[in-house]
Image (cartoon, rainbow over all chains, first blue to last red; front, side, top):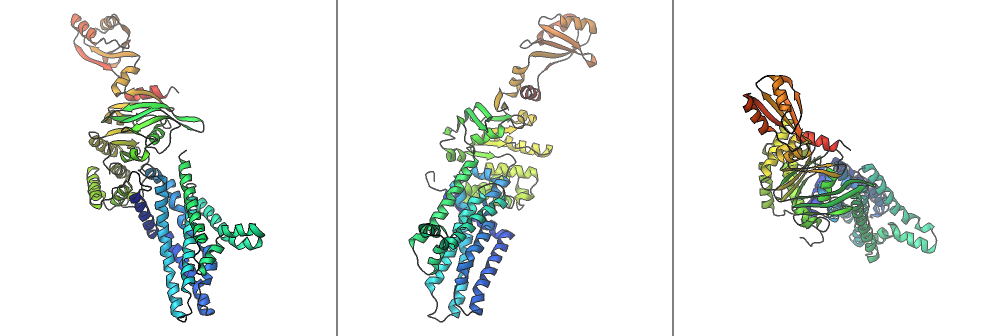
Length: 245
Length: 307
């Protein structure tokens, strides 16, 4: 254990505690309710009104919804520990800052993945409604993967924002601005010329989620999400270290 | 066991801890005294590797705090000031959680440790309560239980009795008393009877610097600039006053209420035997003879009010 990269037991304990905190907290329940209410509408409206068996509506809108909801779920993860002083208890246990950030993040990630798995219900409805040959399973699963990765990336942004201080409102607003920035970059990329447009397009979420939603599993998209997650988790760790000035 | 050498920590150019050095051997219980803002908590945070020192060196159980912070924390139980704990957890859940974070992975072993500390800290009656519902006294006990869940060699307790009522103070003090036989402890407090009652040795810090270090009684002796005796003899008051003033080394004699006299002499001179021989020579029965010692409170005031 002494030379392990992470204190595995401690990381698991923190992740479990975070996940449980979510399920015992009314805020998380409300957030999930809003998520399924809106995604349910976005899924059902085209299906029953336009007779379109597609998750298209989710791809366009869910990243924006996640830019609101994920910061709400992550804003307290470190800020609350800092406010209540329990961060000192954590930070004087035999844990690295990495263990604390990773444990918290994995707790959020488990909730995020459970949420994304819940969207499989929509895929099942599509499968039942569409003609047997009409459902593009690659596209459906790619869409769910894209949305799950978007949630994971926003979660990393949220953890970083939560490490900035004791104030959860600051954490929420900061995380929302960064997530919204990532969302909007993809939308404005088409307005920019040449290589700048290409760069902004890569930096934005849109093209990567779109690619996955088409059923294309491109390593560049996976690297994009992995880089975002690693970068913001790294920043969160650095921020916690810097607090011990 | 706990070694600090020239530990220094500055915040914005001001030294909160200024070249603090001490060495606490195994098994010793040391009270760390000082007024609010003197640097007690910062020193403890340096020793627990919560904050890095700007200068100096610290070791716990022979391990360098800066080089091996995790190894140090494994051997250390720390009760932070205000005892921050997760309010929404049930008492035993909180202990299990801390146990897991400390790497006590075996469920059976951890459960046994939790049972042991719940018993030793007198928490059995409160099992089932959430941390946020506990009284301050029980909360402090829970903080102590969490600090000893892994049976550490060293305990660092920051204000363990702060904010408790006298009964709760006695309870927590009793608990510390039970632990003292097996642990090396550094206990910060600004409640002075606490230090006298609990500690083998007292370190007083003021404005980031150590101003006194020793057994409470020795500190009083070191600091006193004169020896004061309260003498009550049965006999003619004027004769007694003159006789006392005539003793070699006597600096001042003053009458006190109730017919006794205050006899002052230079520090280091003890006139008790001379007073006895004087009383025998004059056949003045000794009704009382008491050497005045500075209380720890007076030592503390003298050392911390100068700045």
